[in-house]
Image: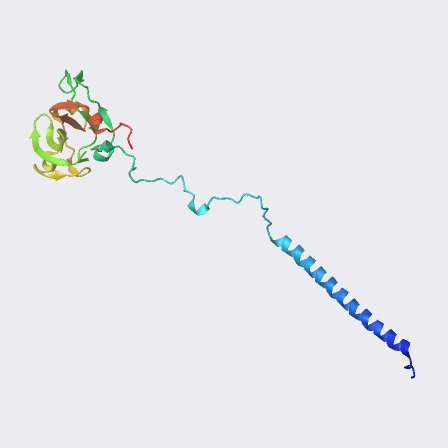
Amino acid sequence: MKRPKYPNIYFALFMALIAIAVGTVVSIKSVKSKTASTESETFRRVTVEWSDTAEIPETDVANVPVTGIPDERQSETATEAEKQFLLPMGKDIIKDFSNGDMVRNETMNDWRVHNGIDFGGSEGNTVSAAADGVVLSCKNDEFWGGVTEIDCGGGMIIRYCGLNYESCVKEGSQVCKGDKIGSLGSIPIEAADGGHLHLEVEINGKAVDPLEAMGISYYTE
């Protein structure tokens, strides 16, 4: 049996093919490794990395209350008195309730008790109902001008003095807090004090401090 010619040539060719295959595999792995490395670097450059122990803010910005914006609605925490009453004509109180003490009346040039509070104003100013109620009477008094009495229930009667009689609401009328009950006129017995509304409050027939009875402060907005 004859040996094949050129055996070394076949062996060399076989070894060369193996070397080419190994080189190709190594090259592919190297390219993949470089690509992965580049992608990893790119990813780290554009992505915020969170640590497992990092504290993620719990505040939802959309649910944070906005402050500093005035709210003109009536507060839900307002007292019952504040909900039931209001000042009938501005907040310029020129004469207080004397609580039984004698005070000087410049018009009559004498001393007497002052059973109400006086709100400064000008003829024609609107006078509003301080509370809900029923008009008991409306009369033209020679000393107090137009006088309207309103029964507010619970033994409380509010008396408005110094109205223009012609503008007064009619007896028996039902009024609500804030309704116009007349326009400011004049008060002959207190003429020296200038234009004003004289407001009195009686509870069960006794004169009381109007502001205290209505639970309203001088400084209430």
